[in-house]
Image (cartoon, rainbow, N blue to C red; front, side):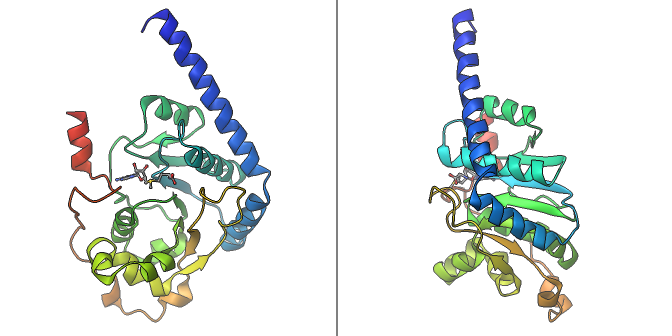
Amino acid sequence: MSKKNRKLFSTRSQKYKKSIEECTNIIATSPFWIQFSTTIKVVLNGSNLSSILCYGLGNFFESIQSKYQLGLLLTIKNEFKVKNCYVYDPKFTDAERTHLAEVGCDSLSENEEGKRNLLPGTFVYMPHCPKQLLNNLLWANWNKEILMSCIIVCNSIDQTVTSTLDRILNKYAYYVKKISPYVIEKKCCDNFIYDDVFNDMSLHIFPVEKFKELENIFWERGKEPMYDNDELEFITKFECMSFQS
Ligand SMILES: C[S@@+](CC[C@H](N)C(=O)[O-])C[C@H]1O[C@@H](n2cnc3c(N)ncnc32)[C@H](O)[C@@H]1O
């Protein structure tokens, strides 16, 4: 890179960093955060979060929605003193990955398609992610002890199930549909100053009382979910391999 381009790149990165800091400050001092953090504290009831897993943040250097969503991630990390914070989006640029490392987040190097085994006590954050990603995460963690110990903030499961045709749910979100009657959803994301940043999202928990009635057969899971490559928004690991080659 020439000296001139290096300077331009560095000035641009500084500008992006500053705007992310500003968004993080706006979140951390907002009535939205007071309500959101109170909900998390009530759910945690004195226990700690072991880690954060975030999928699908998008290009936060460019997108204003993603910048605020990153601001929320960093505010949660900071307030709840969570050291381990794993982040992945196949669209991240190298500059975004560098920025994430600087703010204490580990970018995952592979597209796991959401099939990561969660540690107990993980806070999962998937802002406006494709339903296949949540379906895969549930499939990979189809275990009541794990689910009961985790919090998932993502598009409202209730809304997804009620607004999607059964045929589509069975194909792309079978586990989302199956778990939906046993989830408690807290609508805590609607009162942010901009209505396109956290809209349609909820905090989901899986309480022991809801699972009590379930027989062991409920927890038997089928084979690994796979989807066609042409599905809008969801990026498979095979697509990532073809970007790289
Ligand atoms: C609708 S966009 C949401 C972006 C941003 N969070 C927002 O609200 O504007 C869905 C995001 O999911 C990401 N995504 C798709 N497949 C993914 C995968 N396999 N793992 C993680 N993220 C994925 C896309 O790259 C995209 O950034």
